[in-house]
Amino acid sequence: MLFQAFSLRAQTTKVITLSPGVPYTDQLSLKNDDKDMDITLKLAFNEEKNTLTASINSSKMVYVFWDATLYKKAVHHRWLRIVKLPYVVSSYPQDRFRFTKESLHRIHKPYKKYNFKTWANVTGLQPMDTERKMVNDHLEQVYNIQGKDTCVQITLRDILLMEEGPQKGKAHDYDLIYGKDLNTEYQVTLKRNPCFGQDEKLQVALDDLVNIRQSFAIFRKKYGKGTVSSQEEMQAFEDLQETLIAKYPKQTVSSSCPDIQEAQNHYNQVLDSIQNFFVKLESSNPADAMGAIGGFEGRFVNAKTILTNARMLDNTISRWLISRDEAERSDLIEQCRNIINDTNAMIGAGSGQTPEERNAVKIFREAVQYYKRTCE
Image (tube, rainbow, N blue to C red; front, side, top):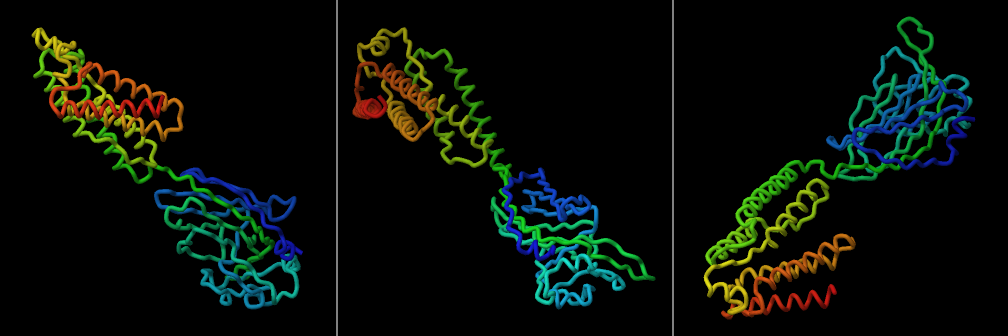
């Protein structure tokens, strides 16, 4: 007996992934070896509206119960009494619906105790209002997804097929010819676009990247030779470098959107290039030259630049400690070495002349020792 069999049928579970605009379809057989009794389920995810649509198609008309319905209340002598259904449904008043003898015989006795199941049970979904009709060429239900959930469930239960019978005057008779409790659960993973709804944030990240690249291009063009000819030019270089570093703070907040994260990573790489950019002093003044090559080492030590480099070295070491990517760790070690070499070249063997300069050099030396203890 059909309804007895499917009421005892073990549940089938299917695990699927839905992407926006890429529907999932599944062909289900209500009656073995009879393709006319097949139905096709389609599930579609609309991320913009945050909805999931379930639709059922068949070569025949589809009939479902929208709520649990007791046989003895809704059926009388094989005729389905519309007014006795536990929900409102639209139909023409003269239309009549009955179970065929064959389909009725498939319902296990006693009939009065048989309970038709609602066609779909859901988890994580809220059904939207839809017109419930007795006669359906196909069935469609749209569900609101709760919040930004990525896992929902829908279980198909009683599905019936219907054919139009002989017309008697204005009345149309419809025969419920076959039904089955599919008892099939779909565990749906919704593959959301991590960048959805973040257009403004993405545009900001791209604009920031364009701006810092343009500033760095001007900076590099001005000091691309790597040398300045006077202490005044060295001071101007350091002031501009500090201004750019202050204008473009490091992007530290990670993003779930790969496009935004990529733009931020490139931004930080350009910022690292600005921070690691060094020039040397080449002076025709003998006194300046002596100071530059060791006669008065530390004479041109800039305390702010040395402290900036010390902080940059500490930050790079911190990134190295938390990184699990071998290629990235190698790059970070190389960055540390470049910072140390370039800074040592700038301060020479001296330790500065003013208290601020000496303190800055001392802090940098401590950062170098921390690097050696931690990374070497």
